[in-house]
Image (cartoon, rainbow, N blue to C red; front, side, top):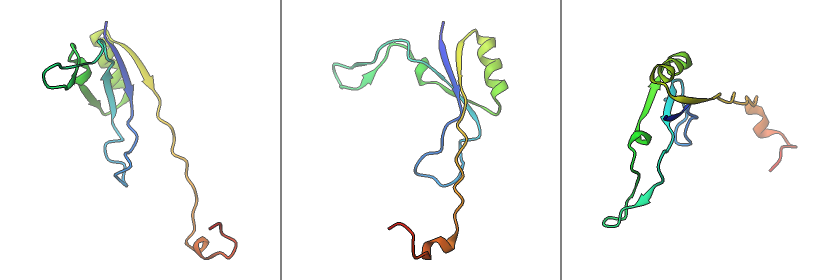
Length: 98
């Protein structure tokens, strides 16, 4: 039986906004070990399920899909971003850390 992981991706370091972080992603776990190809040297695996990544609008849709297909799944809850209040005037404080 295939293993699946359901999560909300974190934003990448290369973007400022929240693009591609609002949807839930279902990824299949790796079932066979990766081995280097003797001819080209590329790393490959015997199963192709680990290449599939599906996106869902809600967590309920992703869980319903996993249950319908009979997958063992694990839900990774997203971490809430920590809000740090900032003030422009803090840049000019005389006691600010340097």
